[in-house]
Length: 235
Image (cartoon, rainbow, N blue to C red; front, side, top):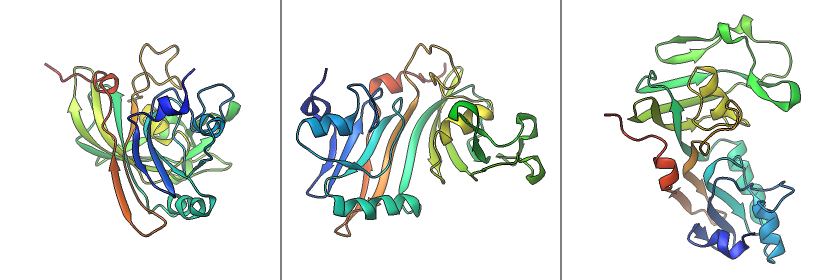
């Protein structure tokens, strides 16, 4: 079992009276985990109270923003709700057929067993001018969440592609579901691959936000070697 000091060591990107920004390891939950991989719980057990301004999935590594004072939490979460936060992820997608840049405009819904899915039949998805979408009359009834993801190719491997991905909306599992439903699921994603042999290839790379004191912070967490190895350059 790791201690809070061990998890933080070498991973703090910013720390002041109001904020803590951490480069989270893959396999650790931000909060809500019943086991010993819950960062908020681990911090609390060490005497430090944190309020997450947002969350990234347990399988995802990279930047997470916490408030260290409750008074700072509301302003930070509001920036995420208002979409004034700049977020960029690194992703390694399966396959090599993606264009240099693209936009995925596919609405999401929540289906059986709380699984996030595209709110339309798969066969209704079309791609025109590197934009994936579905016609309005193909959208299924129920609660539907408009969702937009843009990407840019950074590197092409033999059978994989490394992307810089920007979620314009911040839906749960958005990047993972969007890429999978256009035929380019993330490498190692347990949502779409049974017993993956590698870690999930998603890393919260860059985050830009305004601190409670009005200071703009634009932070970057370089991915680890384990992530970079998931997409070696093609021959």
